[in-house]
Length: 233
View 1 (cartoon, rainbow, N blue to C red):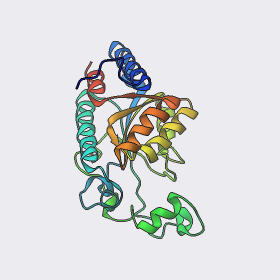
View 2: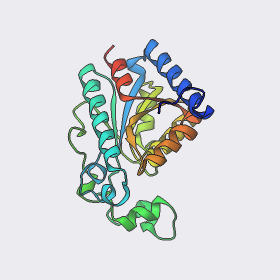
View 3: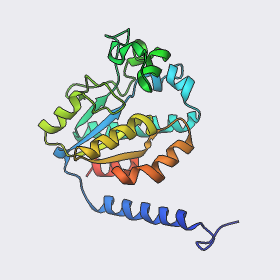
């Protein structure tokens, strides 16, 4: 049975109206290419390979995850074709196999303990996966020490020195590193868009919670198709 608008909960109607208004605004405006950067967060083997440790252990809604990878690939292809600024923000601890950056995972909480326990990011899992392998002229972020890809990394200086004030975030996981980056970007004065269908959490419920309750406090959302239209203007 098809629901009428009077039968749909008010909060869902409000969300639909807000999303339509946001998309209309985006479609009627243009972004200044020289002041924007597309940031690809952790498009590496730990997440993208079917036998990646994080993909196997953490990702429950695998089809959603695969779809996000495909959408990000479309955005990347368009950005490369049209000469937009691209930054690859991974995590690579291959030169720190004992996790000294995180105190060897001893007497610490959160990811500082979880990453050493999982043994991730120090081997082949840290490799970028095609087509997300950085190309000449694309910026590779180094020095990152936190969930946010801006934390103590070269990305902050890269953005400031190139007068970039607008970011488009894609990657993994939505409710961890993408959200942490979004929050920090907001606090240092950057306008940040999360490409909704080019990010994924471990479950759809986590993604929905982020988009309904977190995103609007710190930035805005845009879907991959709408972003590609902007990139090709």
